[in-house]
Image (cartoon, rainbow, N blue to C red; front, side, top):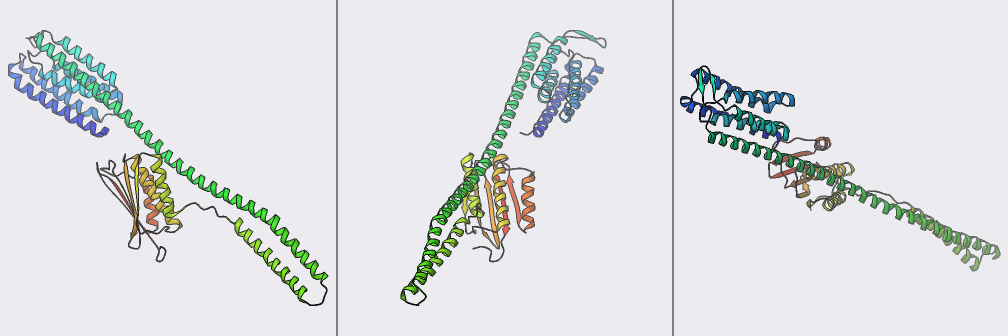
Length: 405
């Protein structure tokens, strides 16, 4: 339950209990041994207590809350002066005061304040003269019942507040855990990408080393062979003959071999370090999240192309990344289904989770950024969700004619 919902519940209970106090006072008014003019004052004090109880949930400054609680306590003690054997009105007002104090102040100060008010109210239950009339104190059993019921209400409210505090701590720990898990997944992806690039760099370095070795050995040997063929041709003399022709043929083929070796070495040295894109990158993203988090992610690839184009690949990747992150961070999802397939003149990406869903969608910078990027390329973004039924993020990215296959 959110804080706003909790405040509304407390407000509703305060109004309900005060209405019960009004009803109890009206039913018992004729039997109470109090002057008639005092009845109007009691009615006014109950109204004052109700007004204060209604105002406190909307006050956020601790000092103002304590002032209002003091006014409500004063109204209770004045209205709770001995009115005969019945203490139902006092019980209702005390219950409202305890509920309000335990909900909108710190746990122990609110509990001690409520206990102090209960003690003072018990001490005030003694015979006294008001408006020329002698007011008798309630009997011992009624006082005991009032004290025990008040202590019970204070204890219950204290435990409820303790439970809410523990629940908030658990929620904070869960949020921190989800954030840490998300960071772990992102770090894992970065490490995997670094490992792939490192492997490519190592392969590139090894190719260049082999290219240098081949150049230093084979190219040098072939060049020496060409020089020896030139010398042999000179020794054969100027006269054309089978031997000279054969030597010239060997020389020319050796020169072609040197050129071919150099072209091959240049091709070996050219290595482009390009990270994975398109569906390959999305597949690696899903694997990283699946390994680093508690999520069970199912990736369904239909007839979508392996790549949508450089810019659209990046947008699709970010959309899937944002969908998974939101399902983990905000939706508390345990399962996610990702469906990618051709739809009309574009590709449709649907990310469906089994999380908490939402009542009113509050988009963060991530989703707003996705909307802006997809709108720039003529795509669409739709988000559907219901409380307790999960969320569905649907993205459609247009593809250029002939740009997939």
